[in-house]
Image (cartoon, rainbow, N blue to C red; front, side, top):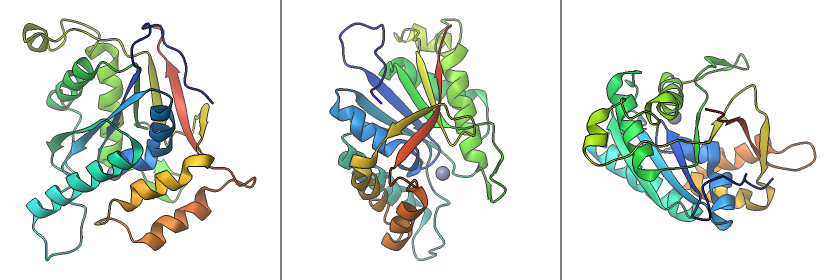
Length: 236
Ligand SMILES: [Zn+2]
């Protein structure tokens, strides 16, 4: 399905993918990022944590892991045509829904000025009775949504940013992956290889077998691949 037209004239359409860890944006939206970028959208990734807990390998230091995962996320973004990856560097596993995180995301929204924000589902704690939705994922989703409304929109929220020259911004669409209330699908069948290539860029996280196993899990009975979202068209 084609992305919606927005009311912001003929300039480039921008999307900001707000993710907790390096690799989450690719799980959630890599196919969409690649497809829509080909249609003229500009995609930006924002990674909220430093990824510093994502390894059992005690031969690498925390700082090495942080650097490695940053580079992996940049490599994945390059595969997809994502313009830039931004990092907030909050500590992995310790994200809390506080004013600092909210302000950080608001600042990026006011700088990037996206029409669409993609993020995690903040509402689900238990997924299909077999997974726990990581607390960093829930926190990121909640902060991203709160940043869209009302914080980025209103000049009296984080007025120091306005004083520094940023202006308020209205995001018109939110796309939430991992939601049991999905209402919007992007068919990524023709670009599933790009999503896999992006995931494989996260070498510290996955073996090739793991990612190819996902193909089995994600394939629909008709042989299609989709990225599903709960889409919110902001009425303000
Ligand atoms: Zn994650």
